[in-house]
Image (cartoon, rainbow, N blue to C red; front, side, top):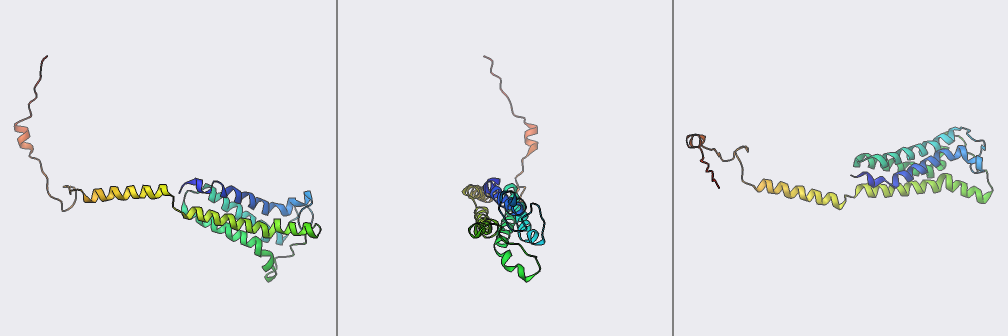
Length: 193
């Protein structure tokens, strides 16, 4: 497949992945994020619920952008979709294991809703949507590839329908009597003007 299939979707996934992985650490510099509200404070919850899916989304976007191999790009798009789903569902299912406390939105009620959307649910939905678009673009075979395949099939059929030559096993023997040409070489006439 051509690399242009992921030329737009891949970089968008990389931007969203970078945002998801970095905003818990740098968001407090501009008053945006969850507690603890110290810049560059690492917690286990941030690592498993934000950095991990952000890194997977970024790397998947990079693979979708750079890959010309359909299987590699498909796997990368599915990984991006899983990372997006993790952004949405990670905070919901995190009580099942000791992921740690993700914190609370540092803003007011209205801004806290926006912080949750921008850092978790909305971000995850956007990543899943872009991954779905990438999967659709990757899985569709372009008309250019179909016409090339048809031309190759037509050429193969022409070869199959041609008369067999001596090189083909079981083909009729075609030999040239070289002794006759050696005994009587062709004459060449030179015309003087």
